[in-house]
Image 1 (cartoon, rainbow, N blue to C red):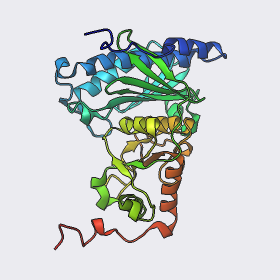
Image 2 (image 1 turned 135 degrees about the vertical axis):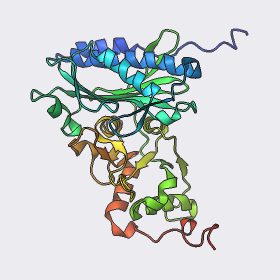
Image 3 (image 1 turned 90 degrees about the vertical axis):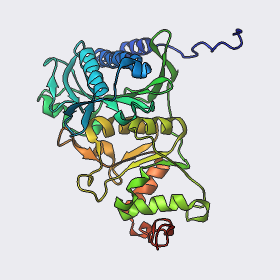
Image 4 (image 1 turned 120 degrees about the vertical axis):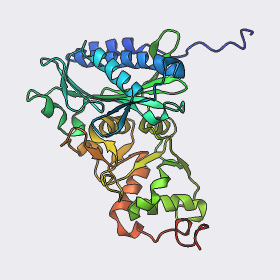
Length: 355
């Protein structure tokens, strides 16, 4: 292989460690938060190495015979991810820890300054398929009123949020309350390096992400929105759209941060799905904070996600987020009866498989 054929060296900027040091030194009272973010990144790097080995690390997608707090069957990698994150955060000023994999809030350091909520491994069903999986985190100041009060509060009170996505490369998107920074893991140095300091979501888009297999369960406004997109240039929108679905919340989000789009996981008419399936505290809240910091919007179809308050640890919520114009349009479909049009022929009685 010639020097021209060799892969290019990392073109990233400062390391995450340097970024956090500079941010910490700019104002008082930031050290605990900087330390927690560094610890989460440390756990993500360790998890990235395990994921990169795939089946060589063993049957990571194997169900281990237990269910998590949401009733979902735990996989081996879910438990490994949760333990890596707990071990890292125990070294920081984290008072309370909430996780999808834990039945209740855990206390690490009662004198700690922070409360950290985590989905250790988003998209577990993608492990064996070698598709995107991720870690999501939300950070609040610890409340003097204890563990429950630290998390049962409006999403707008988050002080930091982010995710680590394990895909063709490992990336970290982080907000500390003033914009969104994009880091990529340098595989040689095993450090996250800054590649964009102010990520912005494209204001308009022709892509949307939704699990269309649930079409028959959706409410009329959601069906109307999707029908109008499917009709493309011949429909009321007058332009063609592309639909995407990865079955990993962060996989969908990352694509939207990179090239725009809108994501929908609405509530629907199935038992147990009335409020969607995504968790408010450690999925919707951090994604919504990132999205708003990048100029986008996030709602439950009508209400701003960050205006909602947690009332139960594993509370679910519908979630719509992405390019602000599309999120506003979906809210209009949900609130204005003029958008509740008749079912499109594509899904109606004149379909190909009806007699």
